[in-house]
Image 1 (tube, rainbow, N blue to C red):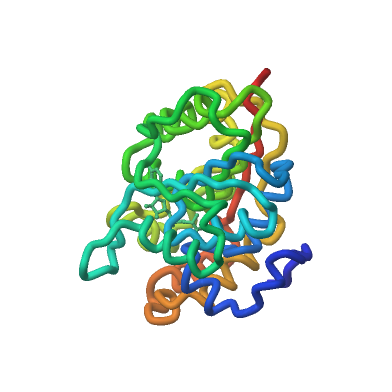
Image 2 (image 1 turned 60 degrees about the vertical axis):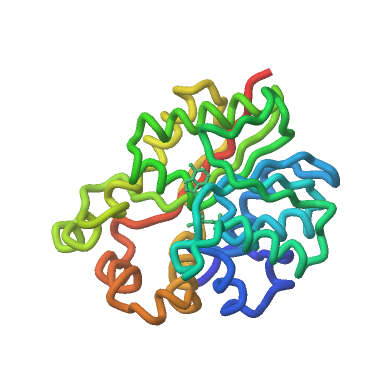
Length: 259
Ligand SMILES: C[S@@+](CC[C@H](N)C(=O)[O-])C[C@H]1O[C@@H](n2cnc3c(N)ncnc32)[C@H](O)[C@@H]1O
């Protein structure tokens, strides 16, 4: 699927195998640029990145936009034999990018962040909140959105990008592939309408929302370059092949904490 948008900042990182070795989910740095371009980031903006994973997008936001980023992630690395927390990967990347003065990784998660009310100028999250919905349910998803609202200053923006599904019935032949197991796609993914409703229910003003124009290109790129996808073509690549653009997408919401 051809890409519709140019991503000049992400294009500075052309080795997509390297990008997807550090990013976790479709879109990589293109997704980060797509969301960040809508957040009015300026040098020194105090930005909260929720669900950093290894922190490659976090570093990109600091390096390419000049933001001061607090990156949070509560999980340990499920692939690591020593069971180290994800934030250790963020520190590794921060050192590799030489931006120790611009990124602070912290091992906490929403909704229990402990940050002061109105502490941040902006918030960003990709491919993390849908896992909260899938594992802990819609009420927890909304509780986590409410926490983001609490820690943003009035007028500040929150940009979220996550896998979503189109507003159509789940195709019968796809259903067995996306309804079984922990954090099944059908439990994690919602429509853009349902997601906007969740934002508005906790008090955000939604400024822009939709299915990303390059959703399909991002998923294709993920399948081609993510090491897990390449080693396990029967997993996500198979789901996307069967789906064939009928149900799976990728959506985004840009929302403001009201003044
Ligand atoms: C699929 S990764 C995406 C990471 C990154 N944004 C990217 O695209 O490369 C999702 C991350 O969300 C984190 N996460 C899960 N629950 C969370 C929570 N309650 N608060 C913050 N992060 C959470 C997980 O630890 C995981 O590392």
